[in-house]
Length: 356
Ligand code: MRU
Image (cartoon, rainbow, N blue to C red; front, side, top):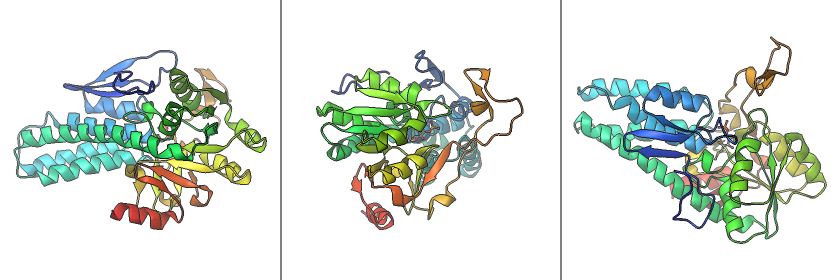
């Protein structure tokens, strides 16, 4: 757990770890004040950890759900494959309900369901072990993919780039390294002289609590700003590029990400600032034609009516608290993937990518 000595980068925190028979997560709700690790041994607690953002960020949610799937089926009694499958579907549906926007959750569960089907002739106990192995594979692959995203993105970064980012897309949000932050970590490692602007990311402050923590651990120069400062610094020429992550990209390139991403993209276009989205292919949902079809999670009133436990809005005020927004593809300069940089027209480029 923690930093990995096998790598040059000082940023390689691993926030999710499988330990023999249980999952250990770095509980992100305590950061940056305290580093609290939680041992999770049942599917209900995995569901709760995803719902409450103890583990968060699209790829990390997929990884946690994959291990949760194993926990949900591992105690099932020996039975026929068909009755086992009924329970498998029940566990998958339960986990999928934890958060609706990040496609990685559904993607990981579907991948495991397909693996189960492919081994239907094996004894149930053996299938359970195959499920655990698949979860570990999803986890390991994500680390490799995120590293590749970082390496691929470096070519887009000027040697003294001023980069703006939103939410948290680092090792905390993935198996390791991150997506948008992986590009920043790798560019820093290559000796580029970066200045990162970190949006605080209202209302749950993933920018100030988590991204600032990760960048400061890695000793990358950064400044924290309020979300509403972004436009002003773009107009002053203080931003060379924006890089964000995403929870789901539709086939035409429309992109769901943390609320506040869409206004950033519009401001970037207005100010001629390139706007990049770093994304593993597992986050691209080719079944959805455009962003209007992406389900957007709405979260509890308290996230915006209270701050640090204190009431900051009149009691019983009506709220609207979507966790994500959609950035239309026309605002996106390119996608940074493990297979390279994807340029418009995105639909055609994605189709080609998934054919290969
Ligand atoms: O609600 P969160 O904190 O899970 O939202 C996370 C984001 O919006 C990230 O930008 C996205 O998942 C990409 S993470 C690599």
